[in-house]
Image (cartoon, rainbow, N blue to C red):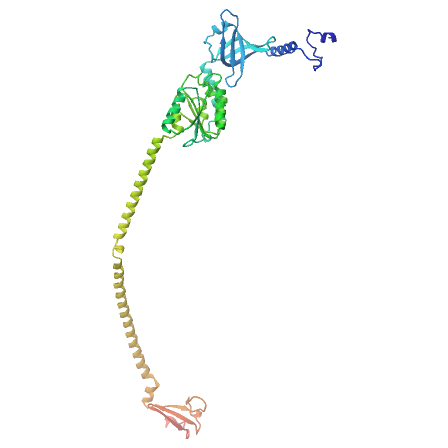
Length: 428
């Protein structure tokens, strides 16, 4: 391609031509390239929720808006009006569908639309199957673990309420909670509770209430409805937002048989909005009655305790040891006197016996002693030694003539001197 061709006012720029401020691409070239790139995508299947249907009589094109059920994103759709009118399942705003078509970029307006040739409504069975798959996924990740459930405060300062505007669920929660505890305060956030915008609005309100330090518990309430109506409360985005909340969340969606996934993720599942109001605030009348009952039971328990202790004291006082405390002493005194008398008798008897023994021993001692011998005519001869005690004279040789002697007899002693010695003794 020549330089003249690349710079021709009506022709597209060459791929080799550098794009710069001096060599800008015209809008038509950019639009053409975008259209070419989008055209390469080919035909695709797209799932979403119909939020707008515009089929004008006499026109050859029907215009629809397909919205993502979990995000605030939408896509323009065009198709034949016959495709909408002849659908096996009537298509209405809010219907979940799967469409087959090809994206087109309109260079004149710079817009993208999906030109579809087939529309399939997502049936209840398919929706329930998807919910079950999501249920299994969240359960495997531990979002349903009972150990993660947080207890509700006994008396919350402020209750956050997310529900539809002027709905029966809102009236039930506010009226029942106000009747049970008149001083209760609410932070109400009205959002869509069904349809394509419900999930995004509920998640936003949930985050706002969770960040409010005055809110101690959040109630997510909605009345009953069909499976399609309750689909936003089984949305993965909402379930994960509930799991991330630091404030306890109560799920009160539908009636008792309804069981959206948010019931499993929430800290407490309430069967109905009325049940949720009963769970988040106590009943003032019931609490007052309970306090009165506790006071009555406490007073009765105290009276019973006092009566029981009084009976115990009376039993103790009626015992002989306390009724007549000196009786035991008197009985013991008699025992002491008796034991003392017995002790005296035993001691006297022992002394008398020992006195008799002493007398016998004394008599024997008297009989065997030297005094009795001397009384019978014997004498004890002692040699007098100057400067020492007298010594008993046992041998004749120990008393030479002139030795001074002391002769002890029965009634005294005489002093004598040895005149001589005679060893014959009694042999003569």
